Length: 296
Image 1 (cartoon, rainbow, N blue to C red):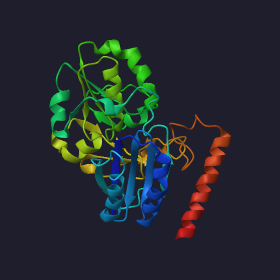
Image 2 (cartoon, rainbow, N blue to C red):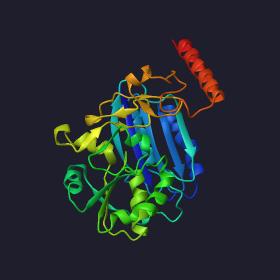
Image 3 (cartoon, helix red, strand yellow):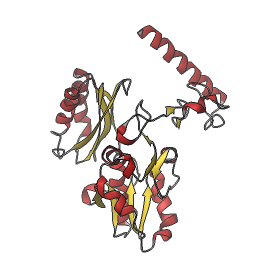
């Protein structure tokens, strides 16, 4: 059983590049896989290890970084390896919004614990906004939530500018997978003059972990960025597969639909890629199959 830790923390890293080598060495020493992003604004990522102790060793190291002593993480488990390898990358932002004036360390919306979320979003003067990408929203969201239909987080500010008139005299409640997007989106709304802004502490993952299904306002599955593809209540693996052509989640029955080719395309993207793209994907799929056979 693999232990998975999803984490992020906003902090001031004057030299994130200097933090990378010891982090890479530690992950290798403990057999950790996954992805971590380092930027001047902090750290973000999901990692997995063959034991809880291995993951905790990396988390303990991250908590020694400047401003990260109270870094929190969310734990889940997987029977199979969730990631193929380990990546530590340097980025301009740990979650890309493209708004240089947005600074979660300067202030965010009011945190709402998972157990209090249902009561908040049931109120008539509260508008609930899903800040995730459209393909994530498509497989699951909270009842009554507004889908901005954005393909990337960087599109959110423009969507808000075009739609802010819809939310006059409304309190705004926002949510995302683990909470990191809401740190920025709520700070952005505060900067836009919105006074009553709330967000789900720990994100959907914490809600699905803590709130029983028979008391839940959530419908569907939550997309996750690892080999599980999606999770449901209790963080049990969901039914979804991943189209390796477009990286969107699909259901097992979608593999019988026109346009599906393993590792190449699905009904969502078959008309979005060129034949040259598809040939590249076929070669990639061939090499992956060969590598798997060599492994066994």
